[in-house]
Structures are given as C-alpha cells and as structure tokens.
Length: 88
Image (cartoon, rainbow, N blue to C red; front, top):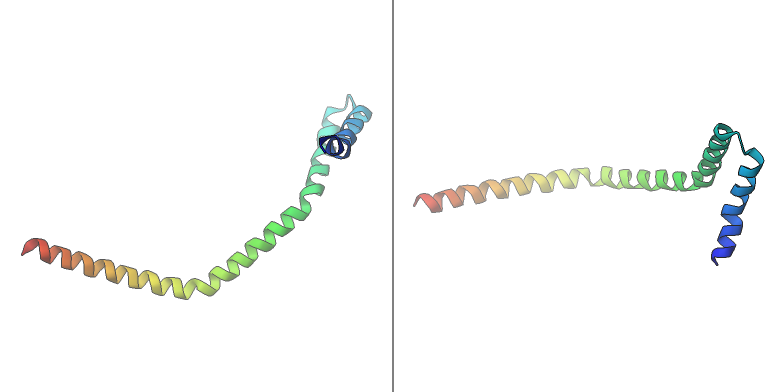
C-alpha cells in the first residue's frame, strides 16, 4: 500500500526535482503550484461548507437572540432572588 502511494505521489516529485535540480527557486514555485492544484477541490468544498454554515447561522440568528434575551432575564431574576434571600 505504501509502495503504491510512494509511486504515485513521491516518485513524480523526485523525477521533477531531478529535472529541475539546481534551480531551487523554480522548483519551489512549481511545487507550490502542484500542491495548490491538488488541494483546490478541498478549498472549494471548505468554502461550500462554510457557506452552508453561514446560511444556517443566519436562519437561526433570530432564535438565538431570543434565547439569549430569555437567558439574560433568567439570570437577572436569579440574581434578584439570590440577593433578596441573602438580605433577609
């Protein structure tokens, strides 16, 4: 299994490095382009997931604000009753 991965991923990079050996700057640029091209589908999927999450949060914004308001009111009531209990 690892031999197959090595043959598919690492060996072409080694061949490319042997061809461009001596031109380190060019090799770094080419390697950067190759990595970006390989990861481009992942970038697109991450953007799509983030957009879905933002849409869900936008739909829930009103409910979350309402719940936060209710939680703050509960905290205020609890503090008042706690204060009244201590002062009695």
